[in-house]
Image (cartoon, rainbow, N blue to C red; front, side, top):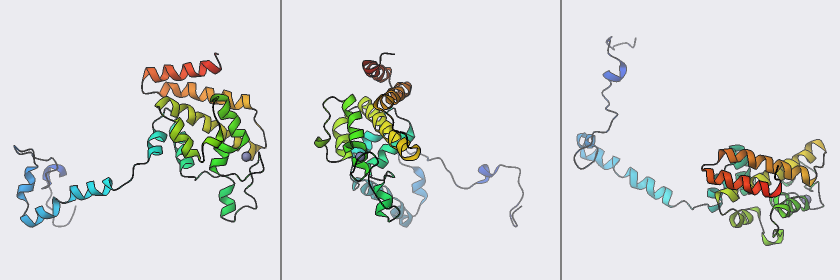
Length: 220
Ligand SMILES: [Zn+2]
């Protein structure tokens, strides 16, 4: 028991002097404002416009909206977000921080940064070309450029997230296990992921479209 606080059987919420629910007057305003002094009212009211101004000054990130609107699991969306921010743990990062002696890609003589790993590396390009016949990595300077142009719908974003995720897993298998996965393995994993993610779609139409797209490559 707190000293000086009289005992009571009433619950604490009932004894509280603070009214948590807003009491609306006829104009729809919170009637509790009328209980405040003029000075207190001037302090409270400017808060909402100030918050609005703060958010209105923030720039809209077109890639961000595309990254998060897909049927992919959260870990794959975060992976795409890190790729968009160039924060994937590629060989270039430890080399830049003097933690590694080389930034070279394990699949070719170029340095391995995010854009190279997911877009310009021959092992990445072959996967993109398999699924997108018109793909040419020279059309896109960076991975976000590709994302902006090729992820126009919820379904396209889901498909491209699965392809990028599969390229990333192929790279990790080579880096940590020393195993070179062939194109068939990467493609099959990609199709399995998309078929699984189709169950997470927000509409049956999206789910049907993703399954149809997969059947075009592997009708199993
Ligand atoms: Zn490479």
